[in-house]
Length: 115
Length: 111
Image (tube, rainbow over all chains, first blue to last red; front, side, top):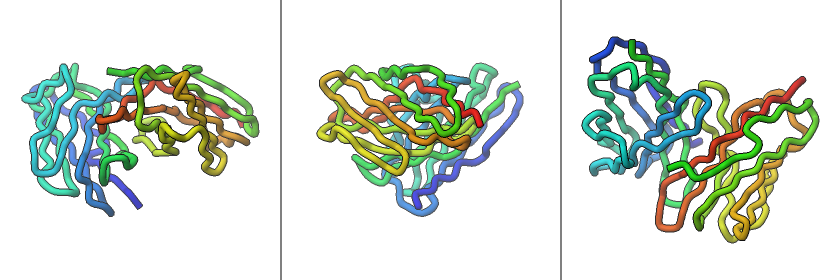
């Protein structure tokens, strides 16, 4: 149980393109989803916390107009990287949680490469 | 911001040996969690230990927590090649639902 599916797993696109990443909880309802960014051989850095039906809460230094998050249902959150540039290239990982105090369940990540 | 420091940064051991990783943190925590990440993949939750617990076991995993020293350790016994991965500790503070990850330990099991 507690499976989180993230799609796509890998995307390469040209600079200036907008890219949408989906995060779905397959067998549970997630009141909260989280989006992380990970650089090579480094730890995960939280970008934003997303609660179903409300606006996402962004961490300091994360541009909300650059990284658009939508959490329209209890099983789906999306991250859109708008007008992506090479410096946005990274590994993006989502996680989902049923409730406070419960572990987060992670997707397999999306490797984004901007040319 | 990242608060956890893990030690060692990298560890290579022979298959069958035990592996120990340590994690230190800075704040008062509600719980501490350990995750595994295989190369290029997402994280797998291993174990959660609450601030009022001192030790927890799950299969070949043993986690300890010392809140007075703000540290935790993860012991993997009888290691296997499949245990090769990066291991991260992550803390959750009281009144804060966010995970703050440590720097990670890259574990390599040599067959």
